Length: 625
Image (cartoon, rainbow, N blue to C red; front, top):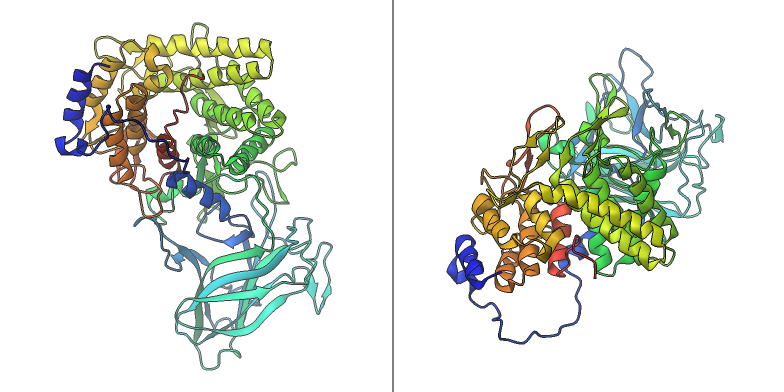
């Protein structure tokens, strides 16, 4: 790019003083040792946190929760059942990255005049798909193996500070000190005895050393009586952070949530347990680039599992998102054909007793599949045993071949319909750019494995995506348009991603790169960053990082450095990056119900991964050497 163009764009985007202190082109580069970026350390830490724990309850709706089916005990009068637990109560205050980070707790309350004794058991439960979840009373084989757990820990807070409550593990299927059900827990109750709960948050532990934990359906429970609380009219307390701790690390397949938790009951909270494959793929690519291969394989292992355990399909498709945490369903939770399955995100509706899943999460996007394929290829290239990951990438590729258009390009994928999916005939420019880069990388990998036939096949697929994506360029606006609608007409909305991804995939192959960068600045520039669409209502950090990488790729180090500094200065306290500089930033896209989709100012896994890649100077879609 000409220096005059770079200067003009810098003037448009940045205050003149912002360039002060940047290293001039004449200064020789300084060789420094490789340092893992803070953003990648953040991603690594999210995985590390789960190495030795299994949660009974972390936050409302969190995919890390187990023993989710609660049943009351001690209420002998059917006309006076125990009140339900409130999962959205205020939990133990959390120190975290932003004002959005919340901690929800479990609120329990018992009117001792109505119920002089009572409690709850947190059961693993079971469900035949399509039917309502049922608690496990020891009558079905649905317990968890917790061998190796050394203690159960939890936080509790009494409402008055005088509450006396007993907490316990196990005992499902036991009575009078002996098993009395076909599938009892391997241990009778392991109890704290009745303990006092102060009015401030207090940490408790139940030691489990020496206990047989090979079959546990009752992961946790509490019990209290009027006798233990003399003179009290009621007992009320809140629980939080209930989990088993293991002596040894057991890292396994894991998907990270796309966003940090938000306030229950708000629209943003609907995304709290969503783990998108695109965000997790970018996290795996960033971890791989930083040499954290074991951690990247945890995410890749989750992809491999999901590919082989969809509850409906077995053809190489992934859903757009899964429930965060271990993707594997617990024992007793079965797909229509009686197998374990990859869990999808959603929320439980107490009003009508159904689990509601997000239509977008249950759909399949060709672009998101391309990101997963690219991540699996990168992980395979750095794994001691490449076979499983390479085969998974090829399985996705085989499915993507079914989305090829009669002319050029790949269609958008499938949209959820009931428990099935309907094919979309629309074609998206951004999807095809990612498909171009992913197939190009897979072709190179197969060539390195001396699989010449597959290398040629994937190179042809990359070319098919390339022909469509390049055809979306409009000289009149020096920009790439969004794609084509289902009827073949050109899709009108102008989006940053269609253009920033174009620059990352094509690099210097795009003769009009300088014009596209100028058009991006004019159409999407907001202060020192860029918006996702052309309404300029705020800064989309992920897209801004993509533009930063495009400048770096074009050799414009000064502009790239300033953009990187700007985005880095807007990281949160834990080094993660929010999706946007404000709540409610419009994306230009609509949700299935027709409402606009928005980004909020809360920690985003995808944005954090992009920034980590930029800090390392890695363009994940760049042309392989």
